[in-house]
Length: 312
Image (tube, rainbow, N blue to C red; front, side):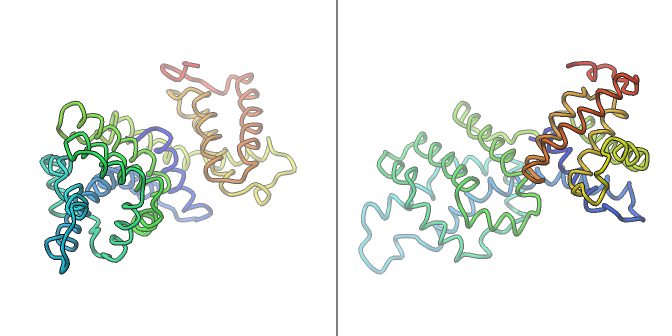
């Protein structure tokens, strides 16, 4: 679930928060980055648990047997679609998920009014109406659950607000978490069981990368500042946005002091991050500045790559 771009983003955010501070602690910043990285695992479980909490809400607050008027077949089917969903039942059979659900980091039912608004909105969606038109079997439950999560993460304004209030990194984590949920649903379709994707592809290497980015930043920041000034004549630090300045700094540190990372990977990654976080013209500015420095440093044999860093 955690990819190298997200590690760069989380490190960038932590370093940016310390921009201009004189007494920053590299070890504290590195710990904060790793805490944020590990937090993504809990955030995935929290989003997955929303459907279970939602089903509990419908079962306890909107059970058609509690209606004062005669219930219709649609009322019962509405209820069963969510509360008898076999994916939800299987979700809590997963040990990791079950442990989380007993002590969740996010209690979704604190604001029941918002959950009810979401329930009314979901009932108006095409995927909900399609599920209601089909027999309620395992395939319908699974397809509904997949569409439910996609709707939450990509379309629901209420859910977006809930997550932004509870997770300051939601903008960065939303798509990786959605992709992980898609893997959960794919495996469920094949094996009829829930398997939570691993947070790290290689935990040791990923954590080491975050440590190295912070370490080289503090060890070589003054030197890199001088390089940026040299290659951006007429653009003092006040004219370059702080975001662009930080991204250029991090890219140059990777060029020079992280030999296992290919220069093309570094260049492409920071240009893409600039598109996400800075001004519309920032990616072109970064591309031009970094390309100019890269060519000069390559001619001067300043950049020494090895191993995987030689690729590309």
